[in-house]
Length: 379
Ligand SMILES: Nc1ncnc2c1ncn2[C@@H]1O[C@H](COP(=O)(O)OP(=O)(O)OP(=O)(O)O)[C@@H](O)[C@H]1O
Ligand SMILES: [Mg+2]
Image (cartoon, rainbow, N blue to C red; front, top):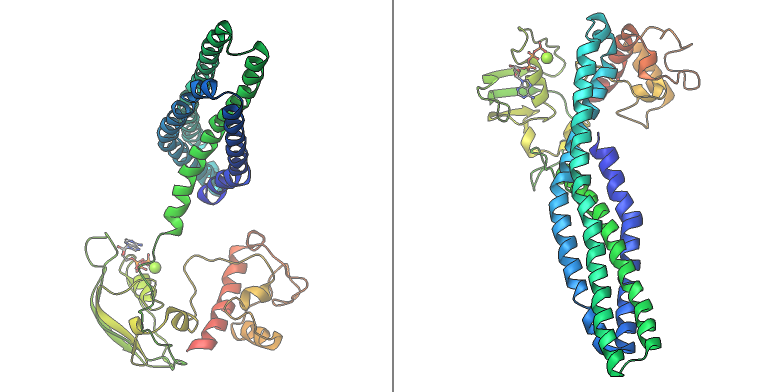
């Protein structure tokens, strides 16, 4: 979650503010360099070495800080997970009187985050004094070289004073770079974490020449299916073969962990079989597009999820264009009883509910209706 909130915010802050400041600082710096050279070339050359030194310094700090910032974000993610678990499981924690242990766990995670943040800040406490030192060394060099020229009579005090004032505008953008480097280090670490997610490729993709699955009748065939989860070791399913004809109702029975859910997960291609193949109406699942396959399969997962909105919207989740009659029919077909807080299970004006507002029984009554609705579209 931290990747979707805090990391995104850090990148936004850099792009929204840091990048603009960076452009401003570059323009100011270039303008100042031009003015310095046009007012006194030899003094300008004296001041120039501070620029590469400052750039190297910023480069070193950016390089050092980025992994540290990445660690802060990881610690923050851990803290967030602990918080989320504690809030979601507050009843379990209270029922088992584990408040103290959970508080300790939270405190440890919070301390870890703080210590990591302190480590980064400790690094940056060195940056600004160093930048000031370099700037002041530049000023001292100008004083020395300018002073000599004044003594020799080749430079007037007024011209030297003018140059010194311009020089201020060389230091100002360098200070700004110092601040931008901090923001950039944070943003780069966060961007890496965001792109890890964005660049993650799903193992299950359409074949290049995948065809559209035509309207299915519903003959499902498993042929010698062997399946193991990635990195899961032993196969969960070994040489499973069976056939289900259209219109048949099949119940899979078995001990917990025997692989019932795994079999079901293979049908919409949440996973592909390691060996063997699955066909629907004779079409191998790997030869058809995911979209055409999944849009024809109704599924009720073990965990119930109702989206905020109306019951109607939830029933029509898989087919938003469904008419009111279709939704009513789906609810009736599934014998959904009236949901306690609602005058009618599908009423669009009065049934705006959040999942939390429904009891478990409400959910279990609402869900078959959703499932039934999806299934009328498929089999
Ligand atoms: N995502 C996963 N990665 C690795 N192993 C998994 C994964 N999901 C399930 N398994 C393992 O696969 C086996 C079969 O699990 P599955 O969920 O299919 O069983 P199940 O028959 O549906 O059980 P239950 O009756 O408890 O729902 C179990 O040993 C489980 O630990
Ligand atoms: Mg299961």
